Length: 129
Picture 1 (cartoon, one colour):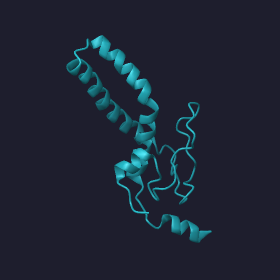
Picture 2: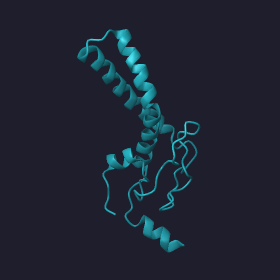
Picture 3: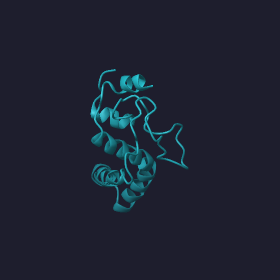
Picture 4: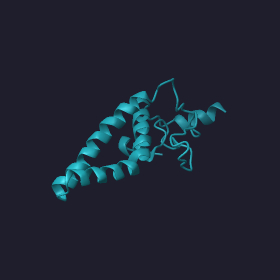
């Protein structure tokens, strides 16, 4: 398999090392929205390398959501001529819709920043067994 771009792999929520295994347990559950297996099923990469690993993802999520929500409110007020109260109502609805996808993408972005792609990762795991 050829290497996917960093951004594509982040949004697909795939393992950063092999780019094949899923970061999250499927199907999606509102009870456990960020449930992840301990290791990648394809290459064995640990998805929880150390306690508190995803603490940095919280900051990424805050930055990304802040700019995204600022854009939504700006578009509502400037683009559609809404009042501030109406724009805040739209913002609440948008925030409810994108909360879990944004949370998952920020964790995916964080692990993709920390773990590099390894073309031989799946082969190495198969040779170990």
